[in-house]
Length: 282
Image 1: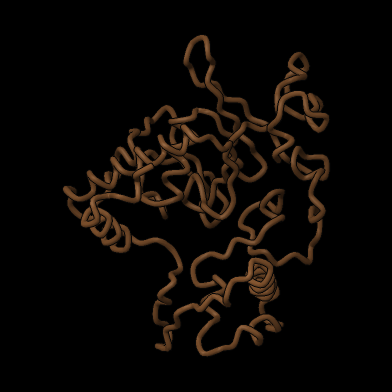
Image 2: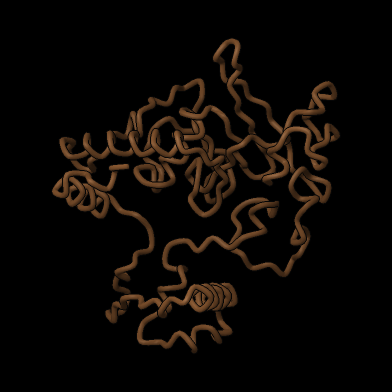
């Protein structure tokens, strides 16, 4: 995907459906990539951003402004019309899908994680950078800003079949034995990574169970891989084994967490404010 976002790269070709035959130097993907999700335009399990120091500082400023405003806002301490600073218009709603894979279009900031990573990511690439490829099933919507007019242009490509833009590079495409929990079409890159949603996160398995036993757990192949890789990273870096807190109450919330919630966010913001926001100093 990095190569597909680079102009004049050998992997880029104008032979894909939706591509112009006159612009052979144009990249297939934009420099930023996100994936729409069930009832959300973006999820935090997989994304690609172009790194830049000035962008980092700008991102910190946006987050800080939103958090300062949250201290004065009523519950849920987040503006569900403006989000991180942009009111979404009817002419350009965000696009997701329902549990039944139907197309979903909405204009508010109320999707899961809209106040956290899944909201900020969408705001950053769509309204700040104005440069993003949004993968929605077999569709790839490319947005880019025309430097001469400032107008955001949209171009839709398709990732269908074994010769699809991304599918052709996936070793997993067509493998019917994959159990990745993919919602919607089984296309790349959704079939190339495991997104641990909610209580499927590996650390939810830790409840008085040893790390050694978890790395041999035959009931969760991807959880086993996750713990094995964590073990390798810790040993190669000379770090002690990470201790995850446990919650022995059946069905109780694991202290490490499953997903962000409003109360967690505002409590964290208040702690930042009490410490004079020093975490934003250069």
